[in-house]
Length: 227
Ligand SMILES: Nc1ccn([C@@H]2O[C@H](COP(=O)(O)OP(=O)(O)OP(=O)(O)O)[C@@H](O)[C@H]2O)c(=O)n1
Ligand SMILES: C[C@](O)(CO)[C@H](O)COP(=O)(O)O
Image (cartoon, rainbow, N blue to C red; front, side, top):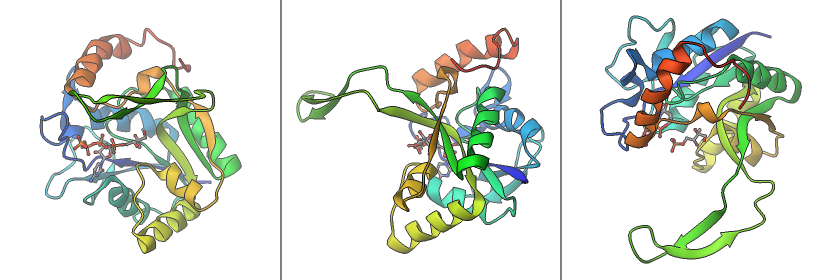
């Protein structure tokens, strides 16, 4: 089965505040360039959704489409631009992607039809109510067992994901990720162990962390196994 990597990279990076986030560089390489380079060895083609009017950086070996107003719309544009049987959706904003995670997600997507990298939640989760800067503690979500933090890549049989996007479009339903759209249609999604280094660069604090990690990552001091 032919596998394509789909990279939504059309976000504006509002929370980071440095312009279109996929183009922000960490240790001399854009977030998008890092994500695309990690995926390329595992797939037949790489497709990227970009903000309207922007071109791919020269060092990104990929085909570009124009993204939409939301991540979900950008992924749908990517899905419509490929005929690969299996697609791997990965945020440009997650630049440190171990090859072992890519391989595991592809294998699970082939077997089950849908899969996502995820990590078990290790912190206590609370719901905030009004009051103060962050609110006051409203309640603790228990039990913590069974709660996972979802990462990307997420892998799917393309026909399943297209159908799930079609159903969401028809209902005006918005999800924060593609696995959620599959689950909403009643489809099974396999959770595959992700990696702590696969964090999403969302805030200035995340960017500082990425800048600290990049030299070690680039020196390949760590193996590509899960963490
Ligand atoms: N209309 C959009 C919005 C987001 N994305 C992509 O989806 C991924 C995850 O989104 P996020 O981290 O929220 O990025 P931004 O939308 O750029 O960030 P912000 O919400 O802070 O503006 C990113 O690779 C982003 O480029 C996209 O392709 N199209
Ligand atoms: C897809 C995702 O990265 C999984 O955790 C996440 O839902 C994206 O959320 P964002 O608010 O669009 O960054």
